[in-house]
Image 1 (spheres, chains in turn blue, red):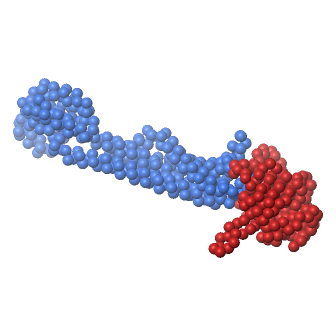
Image 2: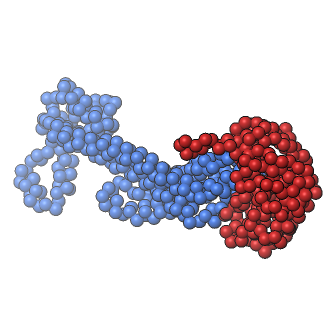
Image 3: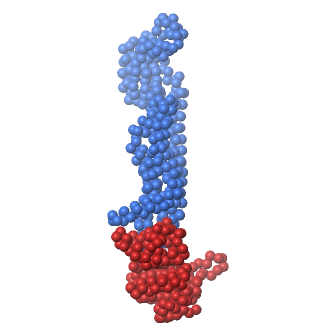
Length: 302
Length: 232
């Protein structure tokens, strides 16, 4: 048992070394497949973070009339907080709204000046509401509009922003769906190409495999070294892909940060490093072994 | 040990109007343990087909081939390797492993048989010396001459001490000097108890051996003589 295992590994590695040219081609293709899988994983994670970030930014503000009392507003706040779809509610008083405005426009003295000119605080107290899912905004707003305190409400800015919100969410779902379809097609194509490369590599050995049968080698004895060879190709490909993905993440992290401050590609890579590595090894080894197995079978008929 | 019982092999003719090609027709004979049989006949007489059937490379169209208790004509694909390990074959076109060295071509057979590393280290150099290929141990088949390839093919057929050796024109590419060496080797192995079926159309070889000769003509057994001579 031990002898045959040792022998199998030795024959497999020797055969790998002797057919190095075609094996390099195989490794190259399998590496590409693994890279594709890994990039899909990273893009998928990054886009999830991006989507979560956008969702976080979407909110609905309810502005109250000048005469609305703070305790009334706090009462409404506690009612709204109890709606299960609502994620959180934030109260912004008149003063806070003014401070925020000044803070945001401190570089623009004309605006600040015009505010002081008015003398009075022109801002209204408001509640900023965030819900768990975008589709729930309309439910929450209609609830408030028809509630008992609708005479306290000056305006709900949901309707002004509705087209924007709707568009963001339709884009997100389209990107998700399109990305998935593209990924699926790419994966199928790449697996097919990898399989074909291994098949060509083994077809060079077709004659030899038939002779092995003729001198009395069992199917298992013939197949095993090819499986080892496939596995070696897979492991080497996975290691190459791992290094490439790491360098890639390292290189683009700062550039992505500019576009999307929430996403750290390198951070994503590091926090999932074990999963990525296992994914790569699994894709590489199973592709190598599975393709070899199918390719060898053809020559075992004699 | 080997019994052919009314064996026929008919190949389909690929040309449109052609009749099927009969390679063997009602061939029956018996090969005893440690018998030496020369199979003679012109090219196309059916010698190679006969050996292919015995090795289980093809199934007969009709008739039975028995190897001890195995019925080769009905053997299962998964069992055929056990049968083949009891046979040593020298193929007409050698069928060496192109990606293995001379040494590995032989040691592979022993690995297939499940021999341990020490046996391999002991037996392979011995057989290489016997066929005069010690100097070529690390060369690949494409680096060998025709005669060297043929001697390697013979060494590969002998190494695992099979019960029967099927040799298809093993002297086809050899000069008279090497030819008589190979024949002496086959006779010696036969003396040690291995049956030999030697297919050849070489008159000199058959006349020198002076053992049983089966002559095939158009797929039929034309003669079967103890201590026969080459006849056409």
